[in-house]
Picture 1 (cartoon, rainbow, N blue to C red):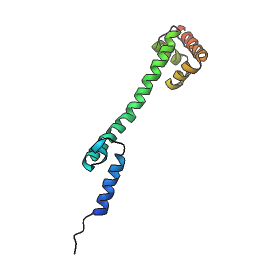
Picture 2: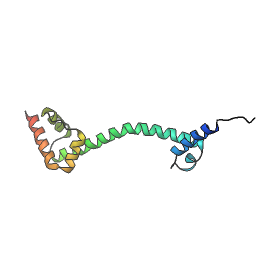
Picture 3: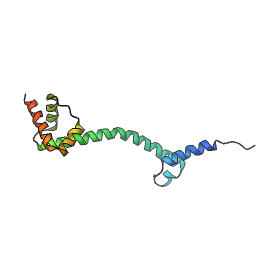
Picture 4: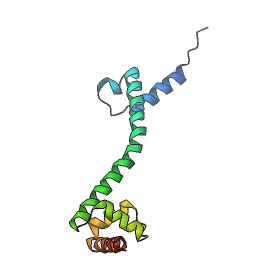
Length: 119
């Protein structure tokens, strides 16, 4: 009687890894061992960078807001402090979009922030 090896499960597991490695260059998409290592590393990067993406976007929004503030003669930190004192709660993503798409409304916010700082 022939010896039974877990052929189906083994084949399915390898096929799954190679499918995940599709698009990788060279042996990393063809050979199981190389593909397994590449996929594991790729998943680590994916997890890490999902967290980093949030930080990077926040940095971008702050840079945009800061640039728009300086054009209007106020620093970013004083602007944010003024908004807090004026009890205006707008997140940085919205402020960034406003600075780009609607500079007039952004100027109004700066005026409100400056008034709150003066008090």
